[in-house]
Length: 87
Length: 411
Image (cartoon, rainbow over all chains, first blue to last red; front, side, top):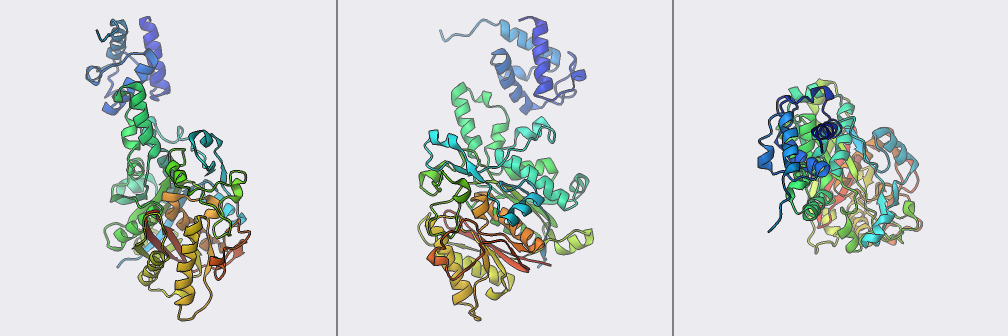
């Protein structure tokens, strides 16, 4: 998946599901201050990114996300991680 | 002790989704009962339910406010919204004054089960999202209403099965009588999904007249075979009398009194003794005599044993022990139209009774083809009647033997 595809899909659910104004969705937008996303919203975002991208972030990883740009990077990094196995 | 009056009402039920449409349905004797055929595959014997539309809240509330609402809280939002408009209380007033909230609600089964099954399926509780932790609480209704409408006073939830809604009104009235609150949003809410009443089907309390939904709920009919589960939400704005007058509020009725009792019979078995005591206590609390009551909104759920016990209790109090030895008050069971609205019923039947009082009519107990022998001495209203109701009594008798009776006075 290209970075632009990640950005497009992420912006789409932030607009449709999280009811964010498209004009706010800039890489430098801060999750808490600019996008009004709180710690409970972070838990919901974990569910959404799992549904949309098939990745399973941990709350501790999500808490490192400060800006929307961080979020795009984080999703890209998780998508590129090798699959975990039990072995 | 301070007086408590009703200055606003709101309702979302299977017979209408606002006060006007509910008044029409009561007057016309319209049933709100329908079929849920998908319940057959779940092992239900009864496929009947009050059909309550889910409100579309997307244009009314933002995602975060919707996210924590259970099914019953969605209904409660609509009823509370209407009640506050009806009481001429806007958002600014709520922000600047201390308003309390008390809701009757005894389950949130849908959310509890969805949480458990969702976590098992995903193998990870983090995949539930944030809303379920709130939705799964029985206090989710009062909690959400306080959050949405900025109700910053007392916040309580009453849970006493089918007496929950009536207990919410009594608890709110007590808080106003004692001077602790001036205004309280008091109501009841009930989920209608297939998780909500499945255990009641399992103890054979639901009607199995699956071929005739509108005729299935038939309180006091000789051939009744069980209750029909239903739900929604109903809300009353209760206010201290002088406060209401000073605010220039429309006063719909006064909470004249209330009474309680607990049955001594085994769980699930109704008791004429317990029901008699609750009604007697309510009359004493209201400083009224049996002959003062114009109308009884019966609990009468259409179960075989419940309706008989209530008929016996009413006869004992209003006919046999009355010093005037007169006939019984006029009686109807609005559950014949709505089904049993359970945790909401005490609040919704308060709304129905006050609507009848305001509009000078009595709603009928429909579907009585042959009156049960136990009810033959009672004045059961079987057709809509014009009537002046000055004082109404509403019975709520909870599964488990918790009884709560309310008395309303027109002023």
